[in-house]
Length: 303
Image (cartoon, rainbow, N blue to C red; front, side, top):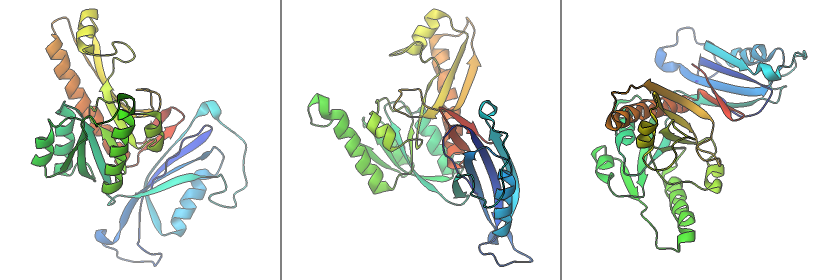
């Protein structure tokens, strides 16, 4: 696959899947094993001729386009024409991701295990094309789960440091783990610690979080109990990139389910956990496939 992602306004966003030969040499009868499938994501100011220039460049590099999609924010639509000279004339930002590349993933957890189990099962079955090589928690409770899948577990319980320095110390420990493991994606699978602005900035758009969709309503402990008392009719889950704005980063995926007066708090919690599993898995898979492009404080997710 060929992929590229960057944020910005007045952008034309292009997603292209292609197969190509490992060299520019023309091969008459290439087997499936000789072909490399990749995804290209491109972001640049909107103008005429962008798609044509990209496709021409791919053709010149012996690529065959399998599927293509694009998005232009009409609120910032620019209708001016342009002269075609170079495929990167429009200051394109791009990333190229090969389908057989496996990025290294770290999963952060607390005491709740439902999202961790789901991710590890999907990873074990091959559904998530990545290498989950470490599970990190501030509690020891889920070590046995990681061990059941043969994955390293690191517990960073409350460090011996003054209260005002504990967050900095814990995040320094996290950074050491990420450095050792070569972490390329961080998944917060119900990790209940608030990350600092500095941490979020260092890992911008490389950290995915999951939470219930009651926010900003029913904040704090026992949100489902508060929602039950209020008589809500819809509950849901949201997966988003973690940013310096708490639980307000670009949303990747959401899910909802209707409930009735017959549903108990326990029913709502069970439904919420089910949604969190599915929504987080989708967000992680789409990110790994480089189908997510950040556009301002929103995302464009290419099918």
